[in-house]
Length: 158
Image (cartoon, rainbow, N blue to C red; front, side, top):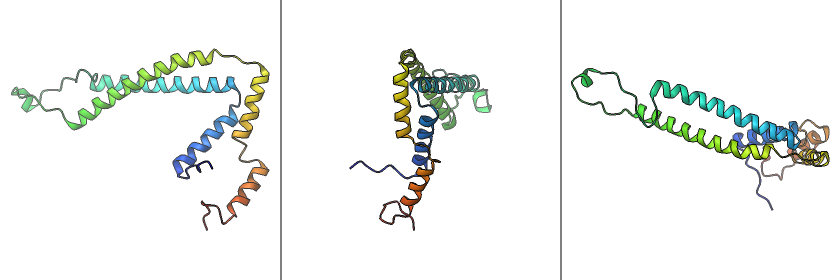
């Protein structure tokens, strides 16, 4: 018997979003466009944040020159602060994310080029209806009400 889906709020939010994306984008073409737009928006936002952080804090490989302080003016180098180390780590992580996003984009370009006949798009729509039925459908609401009234279900809350 398959494992029951997790009932924590984060997982439930994921399941709802997952189903919504299938319901609202039930064809191969729509899924291609959705994923391409999501990838591009992620790259744009992550790239812009990385650029801003690099302007403020410098590249991860070359720590920014700290303004001279009283200790620095005497020639004693300042030890790197934990906050600066954390920021440099975050910049390095964002650089890695951007590199991965470029790789994903190269793979997505191949997926985006695929075209299928209308008959196949119709099969996508059929499967989408089965995978993520409309939660506001009257039959689904009735079934949910019945399930929540069943005391032997493991997630039943009295």
